[in-house]
Amino acid sequence: KRNEFEDPSMLNTTVPDYFFQYWNEVATARENYREEVRLGFSGKTATLTPEDLQWILKSWLLEIEKGKARAMAMGSLGDDDDGTSGIIPTYFSYNVKRWKETGNHNEDGRPLVVPLEMEVERFPLFLEGPVRMMKAVDREEAMTIYRKVRNSPLRDEKLNMYTISASLKGQNMDMGRMMAFPSGWLENQSVWLHMSYKFYLEMLRKEMFVEFFHEMQSGGILPFMNPDSYGRSLMECSSFIASSAFEDPARQGRGFLGRLSGSTAEFLSIWILMFIGPDVFYINEPTGELRMQLLPALPLWLFESDQGGDDNGQPLTISFKLFGMITVTYYNVVREDLYRVPPSRYVVGLRDGSTTDIYGPSIPQWLADKVRRVVFTDYISVYFE
Image (cartoon, rainbow, N blue to C red):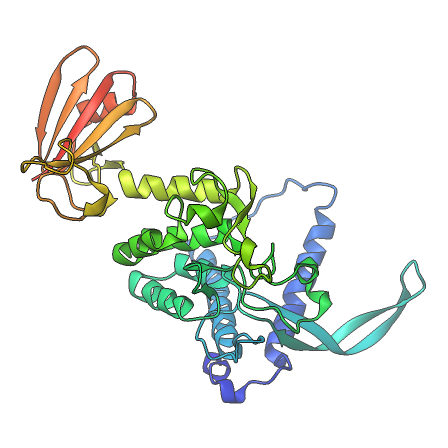
């Protein structure tokens, strides 16, 4: 019956009986399980066949797909959002419309009830929904999500950044503490670096290189933000940035609560994907041996010449430290964007003074093992010719 929930014209705010009954059974099973294991596990084991697991997993996936279809059909709703953005919503709330009393009371003497019918309430857009959706789709669909987000109220056009939420104007205070803040501040429509960096990271994981580096150069990622507006070192992440929705223009674009926030972890993941690649060590399937390959994602404009402005045709280079100890230098002889382009050759220098030339896109096991152990390797020169 999945298709009956994919047509928005057939939807209303009342949770369909099928979904309500499913929620009720699953919630009851979960509550019973938690009560049974509250003081510990029995130690009994059960054996499940692959066929059993396949049936269970397929059932779960079917319910997830039904939920996604209904969520997309329901859409979001806010001050600047009519629900037609095509972006996956992040949150819903549910209000009980009908119930029956159980005859029991809580410690305050209020009657306990069992819900019989619920109504769904829509919220404005939040960035977390599309970010998590991008994790589970292919590159083409991720690109579609990115373009929709870029054209949505989540985009701060003045700052060229993305806010944690769209406008929360008119929302009920039951929404939580975010409603205690003015627009553009903290959880209320500010640029939450941890979440916006997750968005950029997913772009890089889906190999949306042109779009990613455009966002970077446009000022969405440190250190390319406007230093006068940011108000602190461009080497330091902030917890949040006051967006252009904030009422004080002098604070718009300024970073607050500088610290090792989640954005720092996301930036390290971005750095690894830019300079090293997704899988620096891998197993060669035909031979079963360990191999090493550096697959950077670096635009041409990040490279520089050792000769300054007049490079006399010398290769453009960029260097970094691998594992904090090994100097890696990329030689961009072809003078092109290196977006997952395999190297032509490597020169590996060991700490005993010896060097080895490797022709081809990867380093064989005996040498990859020395690089992996770090202490044996001094430098790696990587050529793209």
